[in-house]
Length: 416
Image (cartoon, rainbow, N blue to C red):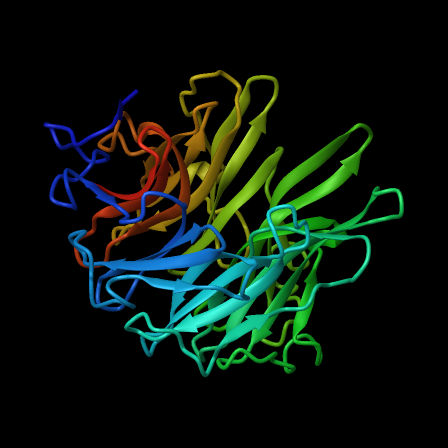
């Protein structure tokens, strides 16, 4: 299986692109911290966010990987949701006016098991939007509560902000009572949108009435809201996990015309990674637990109505093995992007050494034999933290990783 730590002399699709950065690699100027998120802006530049100590640091690079020193202050923006506490960026979004919305988490310290959802905004030049300021969302409850980290969201066409966060309620003996999620909607100015959720500004998300951890939120072209997550049913001695998707109307009411009574669930035992749109279809990525052998990448394509797409892998989910240094060790698939031709890029990390991988799937639901080694490329030991995207102008694939070989956050340019 193709695995490397530099640009290939052959320069095949799936290999590092030597025209990006230096031999396909852009090292983030600060040699510490973890690379958590990135977004391509409307000028084709890439803004990326890191968690460094107690702060969030943001940089911007041009399409070729060179640093934009006009961004922020001398090329970097440093920010905190609250002084003296841990501020962690999770997702970057860009508004139509060029401003950047940051969705993140606020923790009192590294032992804090109740991180709060936090949102801030920067101007297009990287300076803080002091009018928007920092918005900290309240906890779902005050006692016997643990909140999940991180949180995810998206922007509506009207500029309103959707953000989802998961939480766990326990009883006095720390036994599980409920694992749920909330979907919040904020006005463009960051204030709660009380037209959403019957005047509350949020809706509870418990797919099919089961414990639910939300991992993705997207908006359809007609303004409906799609939420992807993992549902968990408690069985005797085990948990039954399934990738699940729900669709809501713009007011927060469940759309029961989607899937079965508003929900879609995958077959098997699997965990949600991300959901994205391809025209009028949904792409669902994550990983599948395959007993007793271990884990596989799991990718499905759904119709707009919430059914398996029969033209994708014969209407069933695509399961893909990733070579590991320790067979049966954990695998994560937490990133997905789409090429202009409809091909799917899915990425994550696998094995004890947490080697990053990326794969490409053709529109018919089969691995692309012209990409990497029969559709899959495995990279150096690294944690894929900041996701993947496909550049609009060049078609190049970018992956944001934290390298374990040379400890430093970096962005890789990959040939498409």
